[in-house]
Length: 361
Image (cartoon, rainbow, N blue to C red; front, side, top):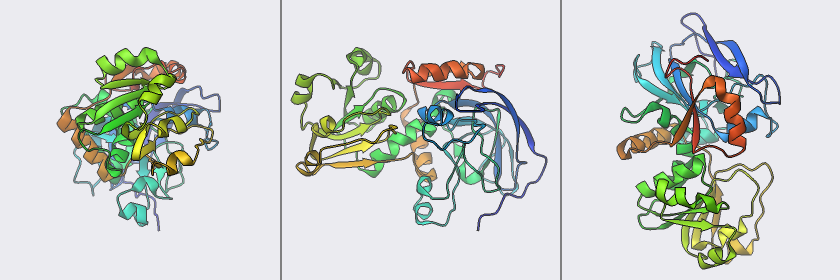
C-alpha cells in the first residue's frame, strides 16, 4: 500500500513557470513543494532540458493535461538537503531527475527494473503524487524527489549538456541495449535529426555502428555527416536513393513525432531487421503487413528506461564523453523556445538555464 512521505521540516517555497490553460503559454508561478522527508533528496535546479513531450502536454495534445502544468523532466542540479534515510547522496553532489518520480516497487515491471512501465508510475510533471498533490517539473528552481528516482550525474560532463541525457539519451540507449542494436559494424539507420536523432548518432558511433541519417530534409546532409559524424545520409524523399538502400540496414530507430509512413522504412531493413519507434505521433501509424512478414522484420517501441538502466547510460556517457548538443536559454525565454521547437528550429536540444548562471527567472 502506497503511503505519503513523512516530512521532517517546513515545505519549500518554489518559483517556476507554468501554463494555466491549453494555450500552453507559460507564466511565472509560485508554489510549495513538500518538506524534505526521510527518503528525499532536495536539490537546487541549475538546468532543465526541453523535450517535445513538454510541448505536447502544454497544449493538451494527448488529452491528458491537468492545469496549471509546469513541465520539465530533464532536470539537473546540486543537492542542498537529504533526508535521514539517504546515504547515497550528499549535499553539494551533482544529481538529476528524469521522467519518473514514483513507482509501486511491487509489480513485475518494477521488479525487473523497468519502472517506466509500472501502471502506478508517476511522472515528474502533469502527474498526481502518492500524497494526492500535483507533480510540477523542472522549469522551477527546486526539486524534492524520493531517493529511488535521483541519479548521479557524471562529474566530467558539462551539467547543462548532460541534462538531455535524462530523457533524450535514455530514450535512445534503452532500446539499443534491449533489442541488441549494439553489434559493432552493423548498419544503423536513424530517422529524424532532432533531439533524439542526434543522440542516436552519438550512441551509434560509440557502439561502433555504421550510422545512416534518414531524413526528409536534404539540407541536413552537411550537418549530419560533418557536424555529427554520421557515415551516410539518405534523403527519404528521393526514390532512387531509397531503392538503392533497400535491404541494407540491420536496425532503424525512428524518432519522428509527426505522422509518416513506416513502409518505406521497413523496406530498408534486411531480413530479421528491427524498426524501433521512440517518437509519439498524434495520429496512428499504418504499415503493409507484407513488409513485415516477407522479411521477418520486427516493429517495436520503447519508452525512456528504468532507473538502473538510466544510471548505466549516464555512466556510459561519462566514460565515452557523450553529451547533448544544446542551445542554452534563460527560463524567461521559455515561450520563445517552445515556438522554435514547434518549428523544428533547434540544434539539437534546448536547455533552460534556471540557476546555473544565476540568471533572473
